[in-house]
Length: 371
Image (cartoon, rainbow, N blue to C red; front, side):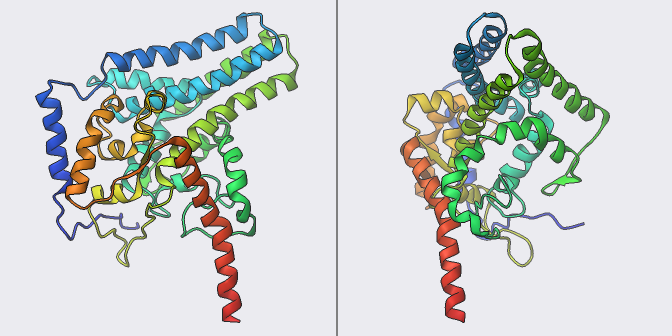
C-alpha cells in the first residue's frame, strides 16, 4: 500500500499553536460557544423554510409555467445555501456540540440529493488535509479532461477555451452530484488515500435517500403538475444549473485564484512545511466585508478561517478573521484575500486562462524552440 503523504514541519513553525491559543482566548474571554448561536439558527430556519416553501408552492400553488420556473430557480439557490449554511457546518460537526444535532442536520444534505458520507470523506478528510495537492485533492478534478485547474494536470487543445466554458460546466455540478458523482465515489476503493467504508448503513443511506430525492423532485412533480415531460426537464435542469453554479463557483474562488500554490510532494512523497502553513498558501478569502456574502456563503468566503478551524461554526469567522490575519502577518505567513466577489471571479477566470490558453501557447513555443 502506498505510504500516506505527510507534512514535515522542518522549520518548527509556532504559527498555528500561537493562533489557536489566541482564537481559544477570544471565545473564553467573551464567554462564547464555538458552535451555532441565535443568528445561525435564524439562517437555518430561513433557508430550510425557503426551500420547503418554494417546493410546496410549485406543487400546490396552482401557478403558471413562468412562475413555477422562477420558483424552481429559487429552489435551486435555496438548496445551495442550505448546503453552505447548514449542512457544511453540521457534517464538520461544528454546528452543535451535540452529535445528534449535527447528524440530523447532516441528513438534510441527503434530502437535497447529495450523500453526506461521501462528502465527509472527500471534503472533510481529503480536501481539508491535502488542499490543492495534485492526485490527492480530488476537488481539483472538477471535470477531468475538460477543465484544468492546476499546472500539474495534462493539457488538451480544447482547454484554450476553458475560461469561456468553465462556468456553464460548473452549473452541471449539482446534476452530476445527484445522478452520478456520489455513486462513482461511493464505489471507488478509496477517495484519495482514504478507503471507503461500504457497510450496511452507508449502503442504505445512499440508496434510500437517493430514491427519496428522485421521488420528491422527479416523480411527484410529474404526477401532480399539469406540465409536459420536456417542461419538467427544463425546470429540473435549470434548477440544478443555478444550484451547481453557485456551489461550484464559490468553492473555486477559495482555491483556484491567482497567488495560490499547487505544491507537489517531494521525492519521499511528503510536503515540507507545516499543515497550517500549507493551508495558508493554498486558500483564499473573498468579499469578507460584504454583509451579503457573509450571510449567503456560510463562511465559505472565509475559507482561510474555515480550513484552519473547521470545528468552529462559520457564524464566528468574521469575528476571528482579524486574529488570523494579524497572526499571519506576525509570522510572515501569506493571508490571501480578494476584496470583492467580482474581483475573485475575475481572478479565477484569469487562472483558467493561464492554465489553459496561456499554458498551451507556452508549450507550443517550447516545442518550436526545441525543433
